[in-house]
Image (cartoon, rainbow, N blue to C red; front, side):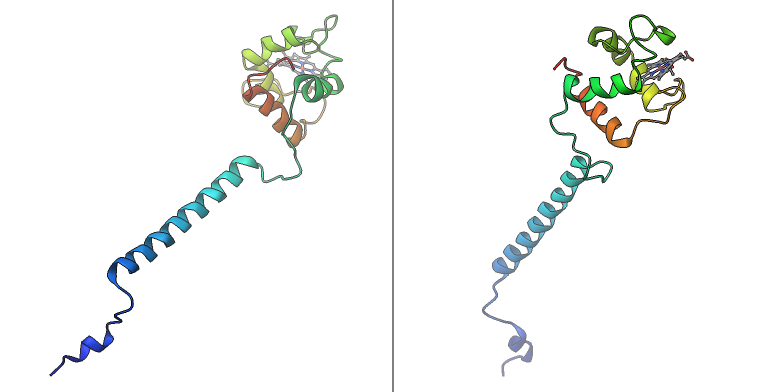
Length: 138
Ligand code: HEC
């Protein structure tokens, strides 16, 4: 007499096929997880309106500094002995960390711009991107 449980087995689905199906599912989950990771890297502040592509010194950073900083930090009026109105002098404070520390209002630095509000998150993101690219004179 045939045992009853034999009826429960579906001969059309072999064990290798089941494993293959499982593998495909796992790969799909992994790929999906990576996709979300990348999205977070691209938009760290979940602000999709802030376009940090094509950030340059002359086109992005210099105009921000001219509008918000240069009046107090130029060749004739260099408050705190800091000049941000030309590239070589700006690089001094970029390289010693005072530039980013001051505009990002980090502890241990005098928050800048003095007497004004903190630069917008988008402007800071653009400046950060420029620094991370190696602060090129472009
Ligand atoms: C109204 C004038 C004024 C404006 C505008 C201004 N600063 Fe300053 N800044 C100062 C003064 C004054 C000091 C010196 C303060 C001190 O040493 O405590 C200073 C200091 C600094 C320092 C040195 C900070 C430290 O703790 O080492 C940096 C870097 C700096 N400013 C960058 C900037 C940048 C970048 C901007 C524009 C986003 C800016 N400043 C806008 C007046 C200004």
